[in-house]
Image (spheres, rainbow, N blue to C red):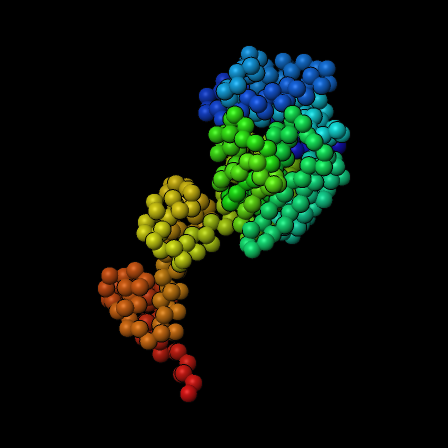
Length: 358
């Protein structure tokens, strides 16, 4: 079961022959040192794994050095194979090659992400009791919480960050959606490389917190699981990408844009303002909306239509005033647009309003 089930399989060819690294280096050297220490604990030499990832050994002694996400992927894949431990020494019990792949497979048949994550947490406890994972929600916010059942020692930071990022990456893959974080909390003190956490986790990160957790919009828990066994087999060819690189598509983006347009018009005067409010670039906003079969203009029109219809049915305000409230400079252009949206005139909608009871 090692090859088919593992979420960390070989990359298909020699890592040593990979092309030179040219992208931005953001991953802290502390994580590389943690992997090197796992080799030392097993009496093994980390040099071949470092060479496979094009990491010069002398960088281990440079506290401020960083590596790229691709180098981290190569290093982790090589180390997991050589150590036969997908946990890279975090836990008392090794997690043999294929362990995390079995967790993914067990979640594939879940109807929603909420059910899939609950399974993931429960089954993770069967792999190791050194930590406990739990998913919960309250007041519209979902939380994935990690509790240390024993002290993780020097590997605490690397273990906690890796497990949380792995779970988030799998959740994104299962739903084929980016899941932006509202907040990340970590029990340990800010490390010297704390600035790298802006890349490791989006949204604010709080250190010295009571718990380790990822918090996100609970609406994502209702997204359907969109993957099957065939997709799993393809993903397993380079599953470490789920952990080391952010997912781009956001399945809730359309609803977020619609909600912002309706509830925060001051932040949606134009695409740049709206994108900034959603922590995106305007280019990314347009691209992701297109991927979901929508456009910003379509969503603006839908929000204007719904607001205008509500005001026509619920109030006695003049049509000219309603036109201004939904963003039109004159009544004539509003009436033309409204008929284009609904097929009827504003007066036609208002005439359908039920008579007020006496």
